[in-house]
Length: 123
Image 1 (tube, rainbow, N blue to C red):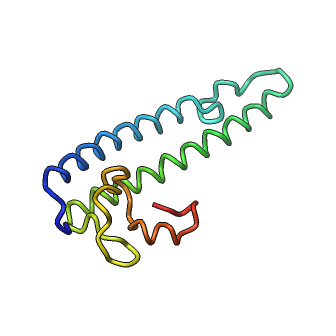
Image 2 (cartoon, one colour):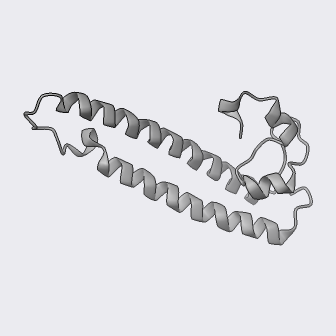
Image 3 (spheres, rainbow, N blue to C red):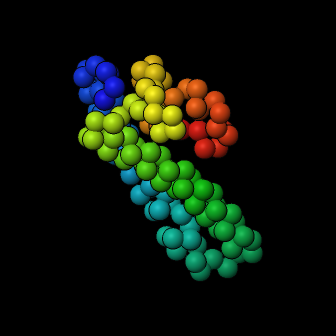
């Protein structure tokens, strides 16, 4: 685990598990509130309802995709904690700064590699 104190690792692991539960709860909530998935407005005769419903659905899908991406990063971080590889940069193989991991527990790149990556894919 690249010389990260056990206390720090325990703190990060606990945080990641709590965050994973929150993300799963948020995904379920979005699925319940989505007007397309919940059929709450399926029989509405008002004009514009279908367009509004599609727009809201698109926003829900976007939010759900962001949450699914976060869930995957959390799972990957928890897996690397279990394997003993947590804190190793996926690109260069060097140690990820402890302060970075403390601030962003799902970080998979060291700060140097992160700066070289386009902003949409930084993690």
